[in-house]
Image 1 (cartoon, rainbow, N blue to C red):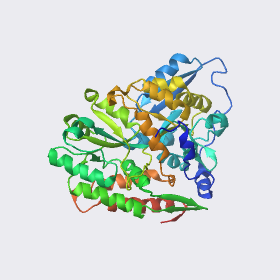
Image 2 (cartoon, rainbow, N blue to C red):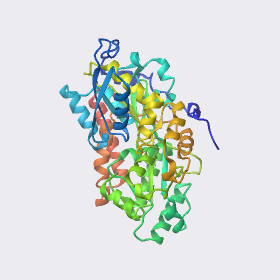
Image 3 (cartoon, one colour):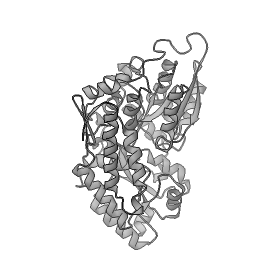
Image 4 (tube, rainbow, N blue to C red):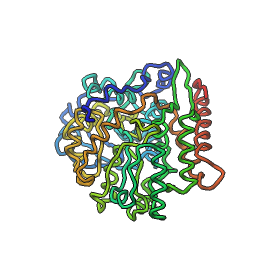
Length: 444
């Protein structure tokens, strides 16, 4: 059933911005920078430095520079956050030589805020701009009643599959996780070298999105206390399910976007991808020779009813030492709230970003060449997935610690002895220890 482009407004996330625990978390957040001076007010253009990694970013920067005289942006592409980008940003902030604007995904924003690494940009954002974004996106960038970043995209989950090979092997697109396992068995039986998908040992966020979809709630702030629970029934169910897929050799175990993963997709050795809205652009840019062979489906769910988590999703934040916050936020707003900004990114051919500004989704849909997916209306798949995002999820203030430990342990799962459940429990214990180390009250 078709839904309106603004339908996500009826699916609120847990309101986390006003709780005491988050107020404590943000007490040491960075202060505002150049909050009042208009960019270029002295007749000279403001030179900005911007670090990011999202597909299509260079094209966006080029389009902005070509159309603006008061601000000029120098873009440096850095590794994706979990692949070293966040460490680079954090080290630059500590050294006092950070850029003026950085990409930070929603899960990691509380971490940077708690470290005092980014500025409160509420005075520069304005209610008129915030109204353009999904309320959920604004809530995820609002901590302790302050605005710490400009939302860019939302990232509902989706399942990508080789429709030609699914047809060849007689495999139905799975609607439930039970059907996904059955489909995985059928794929392997039809071609002993083929698998339906991949477990990413280097990417805890994919696992977290599936736990989110299943109804987990790892972090919850009550009063001045953080409640941490990564061993709830929903997470335990997801852990056991993927462990069994690995044990039975029904999915691959490759690092995300690694040569091994890419080559397996190219050869037909892997014929499915559990990803998010932005994954459509990744596949299109990575496997151009497979145009017309892929399709997008809703994520399998546990009971057959629509449900989704969010896998990533980006924001733009201003590091604490920047003296050019006004110009940085103006540039960020152009990237996220204007037709020109969205068109420049999507028209690059490598991005399928799903804007947090709902009114710009039709622009993105029109700009995306859907021929790669046989003309399928993939943005409607994303829109429908977005309406089913589980609302009971919030990110904690130490996601970096959580993910680092889980990633390290996930890498040991195939070596015997360590299980997915063990890895998640290790992340839980490290998170509780880190929060206590920071002097925060925690239950877990």
